[in-house]
Amino acid sequence: MWTFDAGRWHCELEARPAGDFFQPVATCRPAQGDAVQLPLDTEPYATRAEALRHAQQQAMRYASRH
Image 1 (cartoon, rainbow, N blue to C red):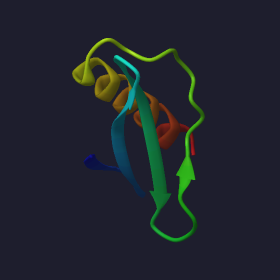
Image 2 (image 1 turned 90 degrees about the horizontal axis):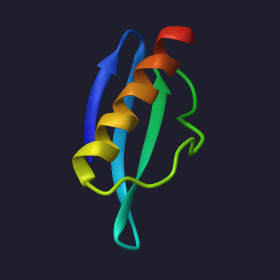
Image 3 (image 1 turned 90 degrees about the vertical axis):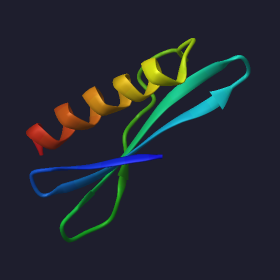
């Protein structure tokens, strides 16, 4: 798991195994309030690095809009 802070959001990123692939998963938690698991919005990636990169981009977009 990889974490980063974006504004008032703390985000946790994962690349969950999905068969021979990796599903990007992003969960963001505001400074106060409940965590939000972002929707799975893509097919699994061939590598863990690609999945983590997608999860990071998704989390950054979410944090900038909320």
